[in-house]
Image (cartoon, rainbow, N blue to C red; front, side):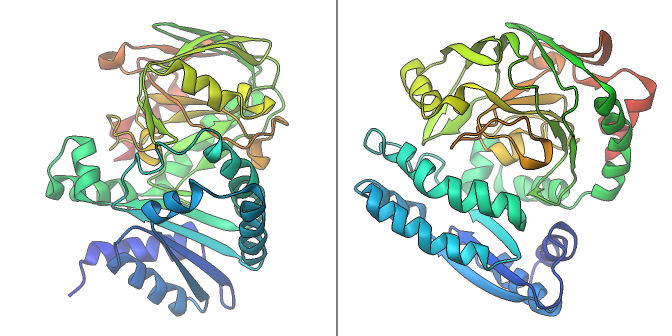
Length: 371
């Protein structure tokens, strides 16, 4: 007998997150060994009248392919998968049992070549912009270990996070969305951070379980050349199979002119992928009440209660500042007191202090109101 939580999650994915309609084509990419949720999602797509297509991906096999792939080979692979993606209405990605460092150790330049030649046209340009999509993890012992929890406790946490009342959260976001629409100058202050930028004229987007599971953020983007000052991130981030810690950026007129971390050389190699990688494509505020601590998994970490992320690389079309890049790297700063505290100011008005919203119209986004 199937775990009823799996059935509930499958229904959330198909009927709420992607709203599959009769006759639509749905590409389901399963990365890892999990099968029960995959089968339940297939059943729900059929029940909705959709047509499911499945791709099974293995990261270890993918790494073996990528380490010696030529540009010509990547271009042809991208051409094939782009044609398929253009034929889809919905994309669902379920990732389970992954080694977060599986793509580490690729020869110099290979990951960047993959991102520019394959990932950008197939995913950033086509899938993100032109399909309805949702990307999610599925709990595994490895994820529980990353979170510092036993497997049973992590599964309980996971299903709480992924199946919370996102419609309630959406309504609570409305005042923040309205305020951001009227805001020009943003200032962020935390240990090692004093950053200013404008969001004037840039749309903002509520994230309420219709793109990611888990979810719980509201994003916009800075005016591309308006960013000045410094930011010190306090959350580890895995990129190219490498765990980066203590990332620090200094900006001048929108551009990252200084970047350091525990691996400064590799950090700057990533930022030198293209010109857009040294500019910011997203500014987002996170407030999922169940996610409190980082686990080196972006889908969870970027929604941490009392956090924000400030993202080098590609801007989303829905909140577009014109920045274009082959990367989109969500780097997280937590501002709750146990992580050093911090403040967010909109047009010289303090709106969040030490991770809690302090103006009356935004108090509905504090954790006690969202659980």
